[in-house]
View 1: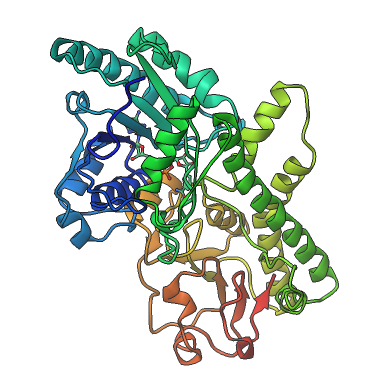
View 2: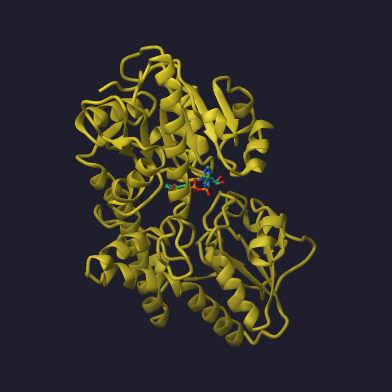
Length: 456
Ligand SMILES: NC(=O)c1ccc[n+]([C@@H]2O[C@H](COP(=O)([O-])OP(=O)(O)OC[C@H]3O[C@@H](n4cnc5c(N)ncnc54)[C@H](O)[C@@H]3O)[C@@H](O)[C@H]2O)c1
């Protein structure tokens, strides 16, 4: 087996979104191996088919807010490109394309299939070029996109074999390619847990490749790596991380529905229960985005194809998916109790993204909440400092303001997302927008209790 040189290889990242860009930067920034101190002379090719994204990155602008302008300006061994001809030099391909669900909540593997088709055609051409120069090193293709167990070797590998006409995982023949799976665990918007601070699970198509991949990631991931026993184990580990989180939040959401009926504040209960060392403090709320609300369906899809119909996982999904409607109902009830007019009343909605401190609006459940409120003819004024208003309008047909329109008190305020810009507000600043009669529904528990917010 002739594998690429770990210290000097050319690495191509396919898909430069929330996952791919920080990965490309981390590999390109690391000039010395963390565990051996050896010099690293790697070259990184960041490929994305979205030409606009490439042009923005080449102008040092990252619309996901993960990488600062100064960092993009300082890179020297990283090429951003949307041209496939730039990829022939690569020895290692890392695939970080989206894995969403379709409208029937089934896995949409079209992006990962397309990326596999592309890699298949690239390694075919690469083989021809290298054969001429007599220096054949078998390429390694690593998937990072979240999938259900089996996708890498049962779906992607056959596509690569078909396109490249090269056979997979031949240990005694250099005309071959190898694969691996290393799930990404980043948490966009979180400056304390960046890609290199999170332990990385790795896996490969045979023992030697597994070690190669594990040492490759270990060279730049400060938190270290964990070598899983197989590609399927690594795939399963990622999908259950998010499934477990979804179910844990669903439990707290269900408890918050019960506690509401009992007039008990769920946040107070959680504060009390958290004093026990092994209580896990999950917060109630909306579960949107493209990971926690999506990944469980990858697992249930695979289970169903094997004849098992998951109950608990789907129950969690159902509970979390109905929270936006339940929250809208709570708001209407509280308005009625307070004697507020519903028809035509303006409601200030703070936050539109699917999570705090991140501009991502994919599958944001705040959008569903807005739809429910609009059905009652409430007039939402949405404010989100991180959202691109043009994108929000294109995706959801809503107007998003960057700042809270000032010199105005609102009869109703809904705090939907705990962006730093909102959670750092002090009572005096809140008082610019509220008066003593304002109804505050605080989904995130960030408004001072002395202002009598209603919490879920
Ligand atoms: N965002 C997260 O928090 C997160 C965390 C862990 C894992 N993941 C998983 O990582 C994967 C990527 O997620 P993301 O959030 O980075 O997605 P993203 O939408 O931010 O980025 C994906 C990028 O891939 C590009 N792309 C799509 N098809 C392509 C192709 N065939 N060739 C080249 N580029 C292509 C898109 O243009 C886009 O820029 C998903 O499977 C996701 O579930 C995401």
